[in-house]
Length: 150
Image (cartoon, rainbow, N blue to C red; front, side, top):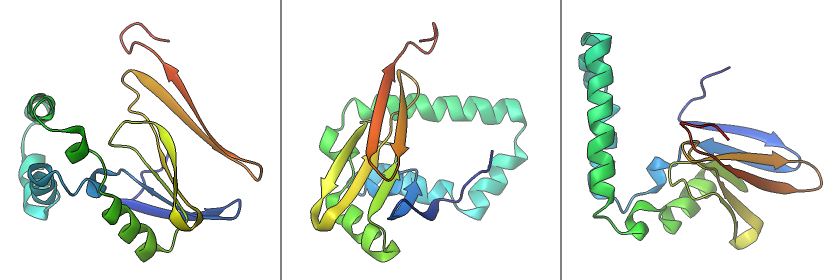
């Protein structure tokens, strides 16, 4: 397995493709974007790395709980990607296929100018498999209970 950078470009099957997590596309969620900027600074990473592993895991679990609680009070529009941001990223990266997660709403979106945005699921309650070939781009989803398996 190879850990990819925040944004990773490849070319395949006639597409210029950009892979990304997708959280940076949700620019209408201002509090999340502030946290995202802070948590990616060198000093934040340094301070977190100074903590024992057990404390880091507890902090991560606590941040997830806070995030879930905050999501209950946010509209789905705020937590989804901003279309203008998607267009800007795809134009600046010169890609016609964007593949991301974060919003956890699996779907293939047809965009203007023959561009495509493919969203994969979260792997907590569903699995997503995106297949790209010369013939097609297809998204398959499998529902499952993470505690009990498929």
